[in-house]
Amino acid sequence: MSLVADPAWHAQVRDEGLVVYAGADLAYLIPDLPRAVAVALAGLFEPVLRGVARTVDESRLGEPVRRHVAQLRTLGALRPAGLPAEDVKPMGVGTRVVGEAPAGLVERLPHDENPDLLLVVRTTGTLVDLIEVARETKVPHLLLDLAYHHTAAVGPFVVPGAGACLACLAVRAGRRWGDPPPPPRPGALRHDFPISLALQAIQNIRSGSLALLDTVVTVNLDEFTTTRESVLPAADCEICPTVEFGRVSLPWGDHERDSSTVT
Image (tube, rainbow, N blue to C red; front, side, top):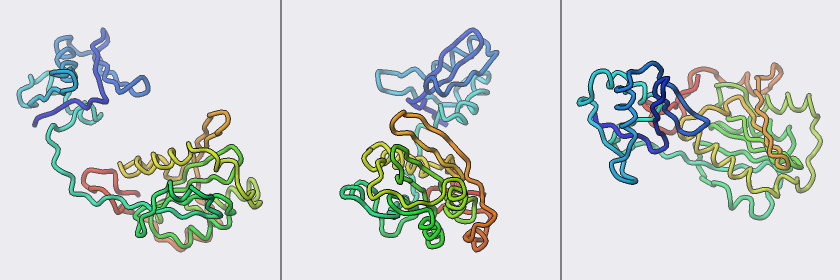
């Protein structure tokens, strides 16, 4: 098989072995390699010309080098040079606004009429309103909560039948904070960043990410701090008992290649 290095990755030979990294936030060490093997593996990441990745026939690599190629492929640092054209269903994304939709908001959001994934945007709606959304929504959905002054929340990503739902979130948040009606125009609606964050989350979900399943990430839009919290099923949720739980296949992607199944 012909392989090519993903340009988002690089490799560096060090005394302790080979460091393969995609930035300071994602790095792996393959330790205790003979220097010749480490140099050969690092060479796979050197372009032939500026901007032109090196293509390598895996079968022509020496056995000591080939032994570590599978590891680099698992990381995603090396990939097949000639991937077949993807014959996968694109993910249709729609939006449901819970509350008032101020001018300009809807135009910035996806609006597929028959979505595979629904972006639920809370503006001036209450937590009780989210329970109704949970009751009516049968497709996977992601919450973007903008009903606050300087805080935006993304998540949970809900796959009906595979974890906590929006009603679980509403029940637990209601116990903790109560459920007063939000102001007519919450301050979080003035910010552009939450929309970009939600759209990026959708892209990640399309690529197979389940990072927001049963999870809420909140962003303080004044201080640029974040928190990540789990959303647990609520014992007195009125929606979950009506949903059949089990192995769920997401309606997009190639289930043989993507992380498209949730258990």
